[in-house]
Image (cartoon, rainbow, N blue to C red; front, side, top):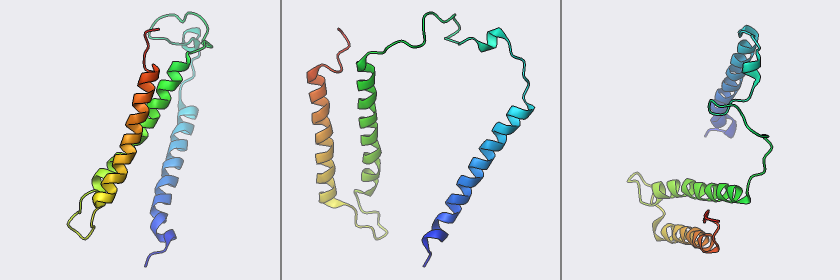
Length: 129
């Protein structure tokens, strides 16, 4: 029987190597990279045109609401994928989730669709105003 330390040790080694490698590359780029500062390099770049106005503009709340809705439905997709994989038996001894798993995910999806319909009816997704 493997202990949790034995199971997770390779993951820790990979993470440690990744962090060390990332900081090594950043450090080498900082030390060995050329430094030729100029006014053109220090100006903000906006799609090839000169920046107009302040970068501290206020955005409408709708942008944040749409971002939150995107996150909610993105997380829904994250939950749907393992459910779809585990729903049916795999033929190697795993019995699958069966009807209880199907019903529970149906309730989950119904709740999210009801939320989407509510948001749609409230006009949150309407950008015409």
